[in-house]
Length: 431
Image (cartoon, rainbow, N blue to C red; front, side, top):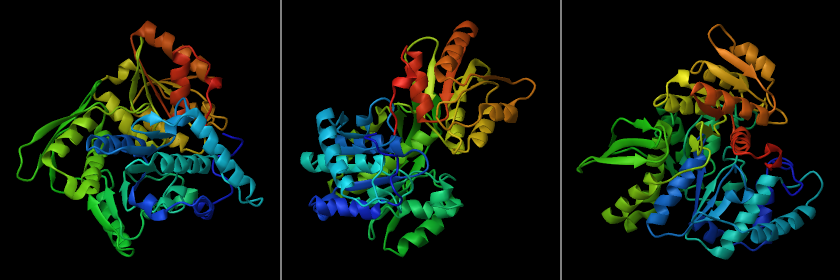
């Protein structure tokens, strides 16, 4: 990506602040319209859900997300319209010029470049609100420099422990530090209850207020289908209403409830029953590429970009709520740095027909993964080449009347879908 590595030379906060200063940003303008979303899983879906709710309330909404599947411009959009190629290239050149003036050993990374390009474009386009998805954590993430007064925490899981800390407690505290002092933190119901007292106490030291998204709500059982999820929502003193989502799974219900609560908080006195109803209707129609997404065609392919053990368990359980496990072929591959062995074991506990592949340059050793999960009654095949793995899964699913589920990360999801539809996965570009 523009000749840069992913994260640049170490922590980026001083570089981001320098960029804001060098390009004359009004810091109050930026803070007054910024919302930051952090979490181990669920950030991208929550960005989409929150943006849809705010748009339904009449606001023009900027979105900064990651990763992308097929086009890097997916990461920067306003009201679901991606930044133009011309604008991205123009602002990328501005960021690269800034980088050239940096001393050796203190250069920006590709994620920073995209953040800087987004900053410049959003300033030009002036959306009413900007929803930023943090890259890793919160405390040291470049998006922290937006100084958002509202932040959402979607989930906490052991991930990037070399950066964020070795316990869920440390990771939670890192993530909530994306929120500026005096701001409001919205907790997803997916955040473990045992962490909430710690989070609340830590937040209070910087006068941050903490709210759980489901406070005051009664949520009925979640029913998953291939077309989405449904549940009942009851507010105190009101009749229960059925809510339908195009997204699938309990985790997506948690994301939707968190987004809805955050939108209500953002609107404040501007919230009316009519606006609230429009927001509920808007989140019902949200779809998000790569999140337990059904790819058109036969045999049936589902993809998900989840890349932690917890994420894969949630996705697998959602899938199994409407497809019997004996009817599923799983294609799995993950980076060696992503707890691949734990993920593979979790997948193998739920599915008995697995094709292992290597979607990354630094993929986990598929032979070692096969040894870890092979046992009598479980079919485990190895095809290191992703395109060949897609063909194998396609042909077997067609012959055996099965559904294919590709899980393990964004690279795998994008490459499998691209190969499934006749493309060459080597043509795709990733950060």
